[in-house]
Length: 343
Image (cartoon, rainbow, N blue to C red; front, side, top):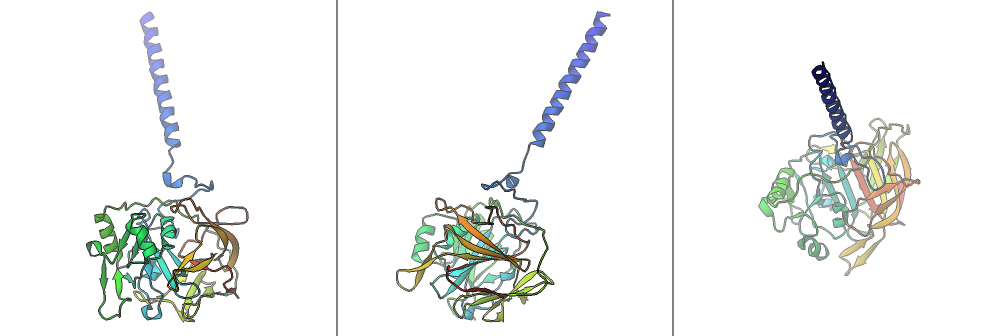
C-alpha cells in the first residue's frame, strides 16, 4: 500500500516537473524577437518581414546589404542605365548652384548594367554609411578619397577596379563611359571580404492610400540643365520624373522613372577649395518636406553629428518617423533658399 502511494507521488512529481519545463520553454520562445524587428532609437517598430528596408517592397534579396552607386547627371550621360531598379536615390549638388550627382542605392533588384558612374564626394560618405551601404564609385575628390582610402567605410573604387568590378564602353566619351552591374559589384565585395548581410534597421512604411484626386507638378530648382520636376499621377499614385522637361528614362528597359515618395531635404551648401568642390551640411538637422499620395507633409530631418553611421531620420511635428509608401524613394537635397514649387 505504501509502495503504491510512493509510485503515485513520483508520477505526480514527474508530471509537475514536465509541465513547469514546458511552460518555461514556451515563455522563452514567446520572448524571442528578431533583431530586425526591435524598436529603433526613437522607439518605433520597424517591420522587416521579407521586405526591402528601403523601398518596403517584398523581395528575395531583402537581407542583402545595400549597394550605393554614384551616377552622373551630365546631359551627355543621359539616359542612365539601371536607375529605375534602385530602392532609393539621393540627388544633390556637387558644385553649389551648379552640377548635381546621384547615389542610386540597390537592395531588391540586380540590374545587369548600371551607369554611367562618376566620382565620389566626401558628403556621400555619411549619407551611405547611414544606410549601412557599400559605396561604388569611379574615383573621387581628394576629400573623399582621403577618408575612403583610410578605410572609413567599405567601398569599391573603379580607379583600382578590384576583381574587374567595372568596365568602360569605347563608344561613349570619357569620363562618362564607366559601367558596372550588381553581379560584378557583389562578386568584388565578397572577394574583398566585406560583410554582405544588411544591418540597417530600415524605414517605416504605410499602406495608407488616401490621396488627392488631381495631378500636380513638383519642381526642384536645380540650375539648368540639372533642373528636375515630377508629375504626380493619381492612377498609379506615382511621381513621374522629368529633367529639363524631358522624361527621365531608364535606358535598360525604356521605362520612365516613377517615384512613390520624394523627400526635399534642405541643407546649406558652400564652395571649398575654389570652384570645383562644395560642402553640404548633411549632419545635424534641418527642414524637409515629404511628398507622397499627392500630398505634402512638412518635416524635420535629423542625422547625428557624432556618428556617420547614424540613420537619417525624417520626422513629423510630433517627432515621429514619417512612414513611406512602398516603392522608390528620391531624396532631393537643396539649399534652404532654393525654389521648390508644388503646383
